[in-house]
Image (cartoon, rainbow, N blue to C red; front, side):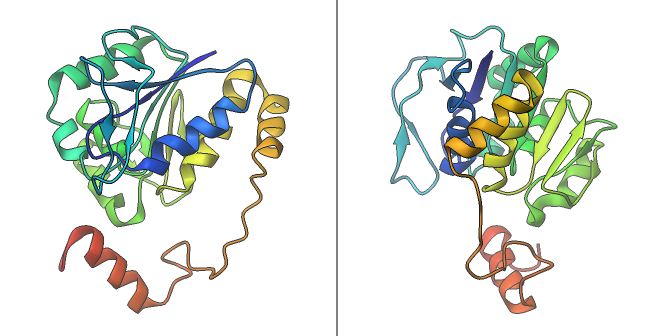
Length: 212
């Protein structure tokens, strides 16, 4: 099984590393972090962390699974026709095309969400409608070969779900145990439904700006 996780300037680190860690826990998974042509480190949002891709989009022409993370650089990526064409090409033959957080908006820009059920970070959920998608407020949403995940930490779950789809439930169960994925949120405010309104608005304003 070959999985390709796209890196781009301004990606959210856990959106990429979460699925990578879950998938790489399976011995039969060959997982690539795929960067722009030319090689070199790809700088994450916040500009204090960079990851070195193991391949570029020029090297990977097919994959069993394609995963697109979200991040502050999503808008620029959504206008990068070379990257969007690569996403479309891999999608045509992939068994699973997936996104984490606002990576779903990039899939939308590539034309892959029309008439599909999908999710993303709660602060951007309604933005999915502009791409013809039906927003669903769930951690993981499957619609055929398309699997989308909610915000950031849901990428770990996405990796495990993709693993189950491609290598079977036993492989996914073993990976879940290997990475000790047994979350226990210390404050219980991991969703807008559970968090106080003042915290929800604080986060929304930080992510999108007042009034958005």
